[in-house]
Length: 173
Ligand code: SF4
Ligand code: SF4
Image 1: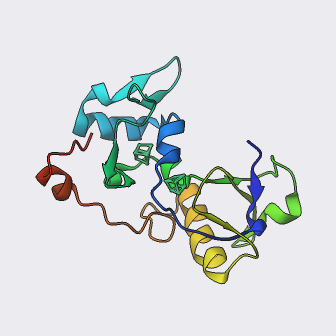
Image 2: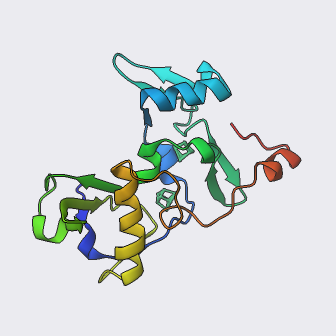
């Protein structure tokens, strides 16, 4: 799927549709893999020739995806892999997907190229709103550059409460 430069996006809010957690295999860095197996055991991951992945259920969904009525939440909130934090954005040092002028994003005099995956249902197309430019994208860029870990603007605002799932006998993983 062709990636779209950020200048075509008015705003982005995750609506917890779960599509990204059902259609993609998550690649883990080595430290992420170590943290996850320390807490959940090696069985929630899957090795391949040179990488580690999160395991998927038989329907293709991530093993940590939880249903909350008609929404889908991540059960790995406090250890969420960087690949998941960045979705649906791609932060690149070159305009790999074209339309360089529209993808260019200056972060502290650093020239970066920001694209979004149009498959995400949380994208609203239009002229970029200030909040999207200065809060959402800035936060995503800082996560991509390893300058921050916590997400506020770039994640779903639906609260994740593990106790809620446990009380109703719903599987967290
Ligand atoms: S990031 Fe996009 S595709 Fe993934 S759950 Fe949120 S709205 Fe859906
Ligand atoms: S770790 Fe969380 S955000 Fe990432 S694919 Fe699994 S459920 Fe989705």
